[in-house]
Every structure is written in C-alpha cells, then in structure tokens.
Image (cartoon, rainbow, N blue to C red; front, side):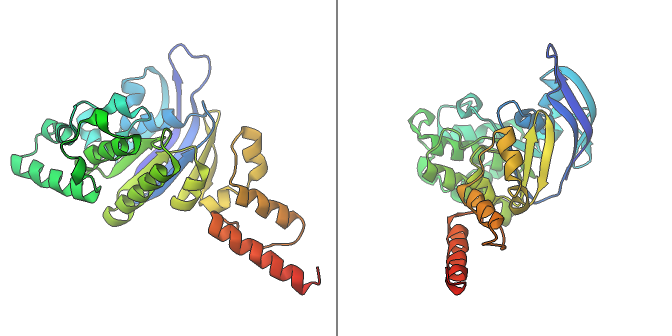
Length: 286
C-alpha cells in the first residue's frame, strides 16, 4: 500500500513548490492513472515513490511517503526497489544492455538470485509478456512498443508489488499504446500488481484504469473513479486537459435535457448513449 501524508517538495534552486500538500492512499492491486499538463507535478510524484525524491533530486521535502510501511526517506534504496519497479519516459535511458535477454538478466543478477531462479524468472517473463521471439534481438533493432515491453519485462522479472510508469506510450502509435495498456491490465488483474501510470492519452486512462488522479500546479485536483472524474469538463478545460469527445457530447446532451444516463468512457458507450437519445427523441415526436 502507498500512503502519502501532507507531502510537499521544492527542488533546490526553484522558486516554487513542485508538489503541494499531497495526501494520497493507493491500495494494493489498484490500477491508477495520473494525468495533468506539463509541469503539473506528475513525474515528481512518481519520483517520491521510487525514492529518487529526495535522495537523487535534492530540495526541501515535507511530510511522509510510505510504501508497504517503509518510509521512502529513511529506507535503503535496495529495499524499496524490490517493491517498486519503474519505467521511465525516456525508455532508451533506462536500457543498460544491448540484447533483450541481457537487459532482463541485468536486474536479476544484481539482486543476487540463484542461477535456477534467474532461469525460471527469465523464461516466465518472456512468455508472460509475449516477447520470446525477441529474446536474442538487439535492442537497437526494436520498435518503440517492443522496447517498452522489454523494459516492463525487466521490471516484472523482479516481481515487484508496484509498477510506476511515466508516459510509457508517449512515442507509440495507437495500436502499440493499446498493447501496452492491455499488458498492464493483465499484470494488474492476473498477478495483483499495483499499477500507477502517468499518461496524457485520456481515452486510454478512461477505458483501463480503476481510478484517475488529476494534478495541476503540484496539487491533486481530482481523485476518483474515471467516470466520476471526467464529469468535471469545465475544470479540465480551465487547466488545459482535453476530455474525450464522447464526454463532451454527453455534457452537451445533459445540458439540453436529452440524456441523464452515465457518462460514456469509450466509443462503444458513446454509441449506446446516442442511440438512447435518438430513441427518446422519436418517442417525444422529435
């Protein structure tokens, strides 16, 4: 479980708070999406979970961040890394090897697992992520989506309880982005891994996450089920976040009194909403 209480952080040399009065609890097994404009504090928040703030990025730190009861300021990095795995926005900067198999083996060997355990985990993760055919490929020959899968595989092989990802689909095409989210949902549902993902593609968040957190200027603005959060379209527009078109259409129909059902989160639900409105219009003689 992640527990953040009255937490704030200001980078050394900065004249403003990067994070302000963050109070947040994430239960084991949740799939949480984090969204906000550039500079909202999303990446900084993820850094507090991995211990990079305040150990790597220096500044003034307030409050507390606990992961499975461990204070991220006081605990050893090695202890935290066994629980929290992270995938960076710049995936190439995370790669340490030149071949897929070696990239996955790197973390396992550094954590001192036995040869038998390493072999078992390698074989398992290749199958789980569907990348067995990439095993001996050079990382430089992979597509962006394939690299993301390898990066996630290297983390999953360590079997962390929590995975934190910072915009993993930023450079990917729509189909590759869907593949990454499907994979994350599989890891979340089948293995109970807690997933916290920073993402700008709000339609993907709406469809896949259990919970959505919206940040602005270092603070949490909204936190709740995606369907409840995206109702606040005017606030989203004020802070510069585009809501899905089906949500905008829903708001317009509700204002005109034509629809009073649940907010649609994807195209299929949007189509259902439109059909319901059209049926209502015909019944009213419109």
